[in-house]
Image 1 (cartoon, rainbow, N blue to C red):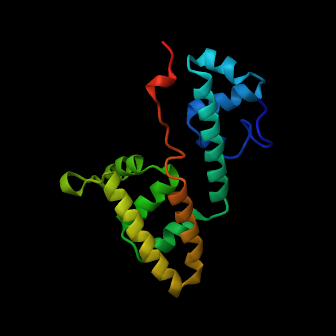
Image 2 (image 1 turned 45 degrees about the vertical axis):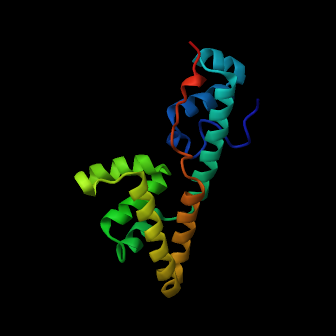
Length: 171
């Protein structure tokens, strides 16, 4: 299978993909077939195909985020959101995974006990911050681009999250 134009180990954002997906793209770009890679990796051809599909979706997501100044977003959001909520949004952009976001933000803020974040609390904070941002954008139209970024995250949850399913492995 030939990779889409512009997709290779030299692609922007390639290093942000999970290592297994980087490896698959690297091997495909060297001319190996999905079946050959499956045998090398001890997985099914379907697993290789699924990982390739997911990695291409991840690359498109990252490409869409590329035009936004995420440091400026963080500064703008910090003027009306708590540091915790800003960290949730920033980490959701980076991971697009609520579970990973909870783990990372819990570590950053040393959250314990009832204050500790989980998937549900991350989702709640993200959506609550989104609503506040929509209201603030009515006063400051420059915030509309941050709504676009958060919409990208909402529409691409888990694209950067690596899921390993046991049935993909032979053995």
